[in-house]
Image (tube, rainbow, N blue to C red):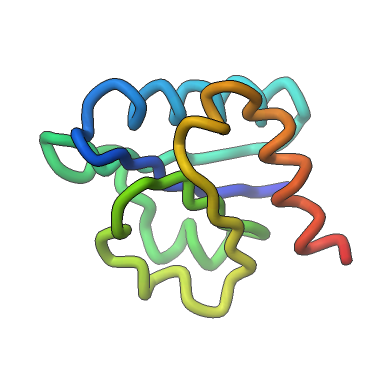
Length: 103
């Protein structure tokens, strides 16, 4: 499964990057490919390209603030959650997100 994700929190410091790392580790462990874009205090990092969005099976938005350039994900299955639950149990979040495309 190809997943793209965006993480962001109000301050754009710790939780943004902790959630990104948790998603990357969990997806790899589950056998999925993932690219995680962070929208932190220094702006967008590891930006997801239009080509990557088109190739993705699923979009996960683990954010506590508005996503910049969210329109690029239009037409893709999107799972939304806050950053904190991802940090606590990214595997569970990915499993829940996969349900929207497996239903």
